[in-house]
Image (tube, rainbow, N blue to C red; front, side):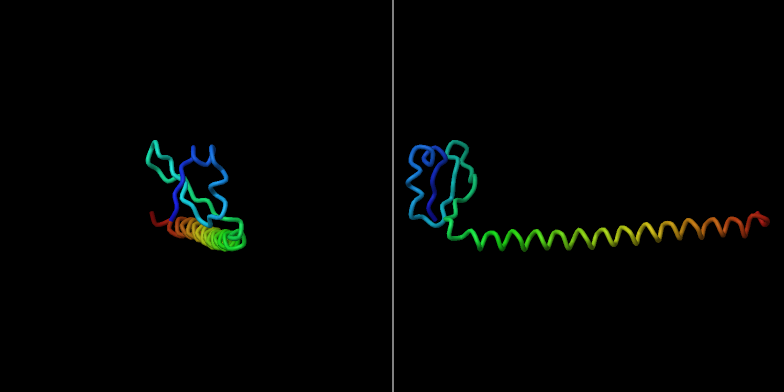
Length: 92
C-alpha cells in the first residue's frame, strides 16, 4: 500500500492522482491519520456505512424494548410487594 504524509499532500496534491488507496501518515508522530480512497469506491463505502447505521439502529431498538420490559417488571414487583405488605400487616 502506498503511504503519503500530510505535508506531502499539502505540497503536491497531484500525487494522489491515479492512486486507488493511500495510507495518510503523520511522519512527525509516526501515526496513521487515515486513508485516501479514490472516488470510484464511494458507492462501496456508502453501502458499508448505511449497513452499519442500520445495524446500530436495530441494536438500539432492541435495547429500548428490553429497557421497557425491565421497567414493566420493576413496576409489577413493586405492586406485588405492596400487596404482600397489606396482606400480612395484621400478622406483624
